[in-house]
Image (cartoon, rainbow, N blue to C red):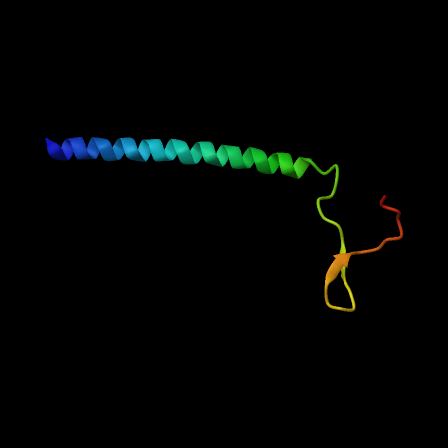
Amino acid sequence: MPQLIGLALAGVAVWVGYKFVRREMARVGEELRKAATDKSEPKSQPLEEGPDGVYRLKDDGEDRG
């Protein structure tokens, strides 16, 4: 009888773990879909290496004020 209880507990643990992983995969997938469709504004700007070896924003001639 104790083996049956242990097997039942293991089954419940596997079921709960599966539900958790499935929910997390759905959340991450939705986040990735949203990020893939949201292309309104670029998140990064081009960089160029200065004479001192430090990377800075590339000066494209526009006034950013």
